[in-house]
Figure (tube, one colour):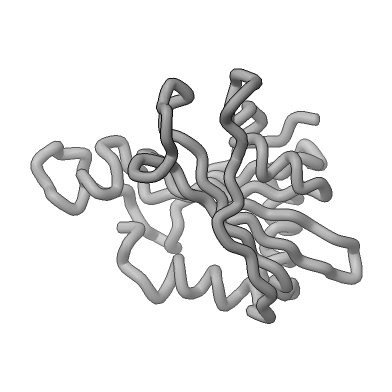
Length: 167
């Protein structure tokens, strides 16, 4: 199923940084960096406001119990995936509303946060599109996995509030 693609500033009252191509920090973040987060739930109500309310309930109440680091080639024509790759995090939460799979990654424009009841959605897709379009050699590669017991709110606060990597 198709999700919404919701964007909002990462910090209240925050604005996107200038898109000048001369700043070293912008080159690290991406030339089109917006300072926003894009939320893509695979099961959605279709209503932006209720989806954001649900997301904030997850952030405030969920505990992350398992975390996975995946990589994929930057280009499917690559022969090896050792030096140049795209990395993203997949994590798992259990709540009184059920079990959820999440992925978090950064592209040149924004942070992408996906949520689904199925790992295949967040592991194998990015905003509804297959991560690796050709069948054959490449698959998302699991680099490391581990148990954890961190509140989703702690992760959110660290990325959004405690660091300045987003603005």
